[in-house]
Length: 222
Image 1 (spheres, one colour):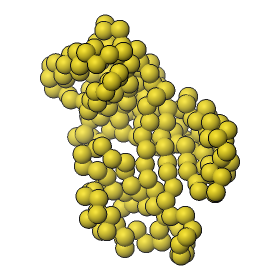
Image 2 (cartoon, rainbow, N blue to C red):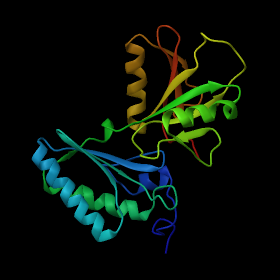
Image 3 (cartoon, rainbow, N blue to C red):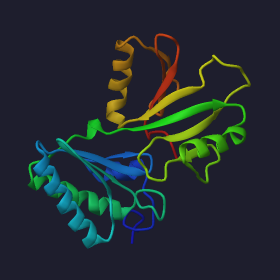
Image 4 (tube, rainbow, N blue to C red):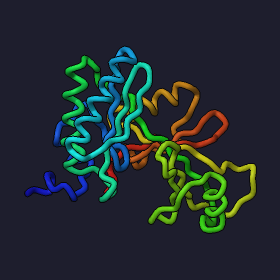
């Protein structure tokens, strides 16, 4: 058994690129895909067929049905990342979508995170846990929504300061081939490029009032 077929071995972005999953993109610890179905009935049929295959493989995705698309997220929760089980199910789902005429739209998937500047994360974490009903993780700088529907919050170390200096900034994770277009679109909309020193890991941008945000990808990360 190779590492890429071991159902307990997490796969990296580089591993997944080699597997030629054209419909899917790895964002953080999940595979993401969106299929344009054209109408609600086709989307519902696709969801039902995904459910049948998921039961067959005993490996279940998160699925969102909207008009007119179906969005799917795959991860192996027991190991905290993408494994060969997700790859197998991804291929099956792509085949199902293709048989129904649903077109993959990988450039449309993204994951939003919220970062809060703080000089003492431990001091403020309990407030945000209580207020939002989020949960702590093994990462001391991170809070997550157990339901998986709201953005992850993480705490970014900064020097002590008083408002009104900016406290929040947005990180948006996108597929690598989308990143530079997204950066340019933000600049064209009146933003400025603050730094691309570690691109394509991330680009730092600022809006016309100086509020910062980052466009991020998996490239350059362990």
